[in-house]
Image 1: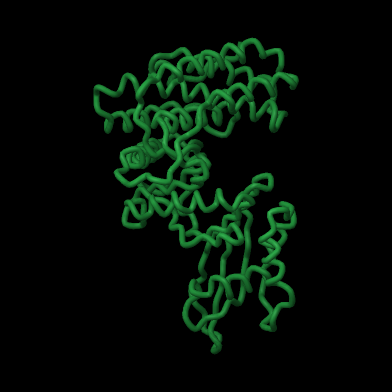
Image 2: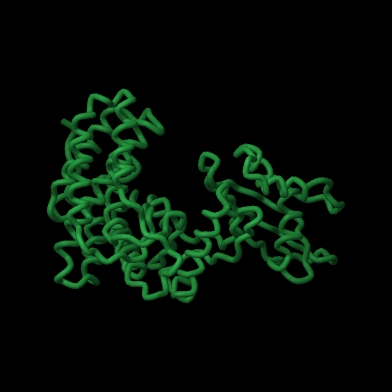
Length: 371
């Protein structure tokens, strides 16, 4: 949308509405996707990011994620010209708005920590550059993401696609081996409450016929988690899954550090394994591509793990994969019901396999059949 060069009335006041924690999701999205409002916002609060001597002539917002009122992620393509109407190269910036401003501050801190410790554009294993955090508005400004989402890679079955999975494993290895001051990065809370809540709330839905199996699964997961003593905590992504990973050649860019914390590295490993299997069950990936890709990912990660630690890591990864499968069942059956009993049933069987397996290799084969 081309912008009128005359001043816009009330647009800055609209942005200031975001200061209120009570603002509705719909109203926040309306403000954040107004070309006029956001052009003025960039021209005032973020003028240092505009090429010198240029003015914004066009602002094109595009919603990337809108998460039920808690966070909104929007990309802006900005076009410029000077007073002689000479144009500059367009710029794309991403704004992430947090209803919980403290959460936004924590996430920005984590991203700056990573950026300053090797996950920057000098590396092929990186994150988007976090430019700044406007604490009053709860808005983080960051670089746009490059590459295709990893879930698209799962629609391919080729050596190139498998090679990308190896690169993803190298990114995760780099994170887990990060040598940096982690003061200020919280430790992941105990799992007891969340796992028990998953099972309890699912008992109120139509999938309550699975309740005895769900309760047994939760008990096994919690017992095995409790048996993991003296596991060193490392920085973990916390939500390491295909939607948050972008690949381009051997370059990997990872986003969404809202759950970044210190925990068992097996958490990230189990999460991505469970998520990729879930995507195959839902038809979002080729069945033939998930197994070789996951095996390549797992083998690459293990190659950088001391031999004496591999057996224990494999066992712990199985439990975290089971935990993530349980969370996915809860999400489909309780939060967004409608995926079908068949998918819930196969995920439950998958979770049960992971929960009792002693090593990842036992369950990396083809998906189980629905009984």
